[in-house]
Length: 131
Ligand SMILES: [Zn+2]
Ligand SMILES: [Zn+2]
Image (cartoon, rainbow, N blue to C red; front, top):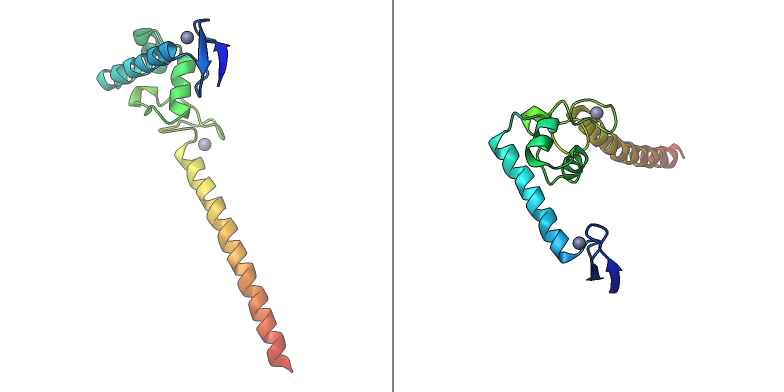
């Protein structure tokens, strides 16, 4: 625990876990809720419309999305870009194609590993059979 100045409002508070003070935290939560509610009511609104409607900066809204706290509404599809290929994203940080590719890479890694292990086993058996 340490006493720090809140980077958001400048008040002094005792820091336990969060970088901002409890009052700001509550405010931030309210802001997040207002964004969420706005999307619920205006699912077709783009990122800039959402930002205008809620008064929350697009940067902050994108952060919510990257953190996985916010679903990308249909209106925002074109505004959120995949971190790998820059394509449209429907949820989180990467597009569906890149997500599939990443999953495949992981499965490939595992299957290659087990294949190699199997190959070295068969080689071992072949050697033993030769004598
Ligand atoms: Zn504060
Ligand atoms: Zn992508």
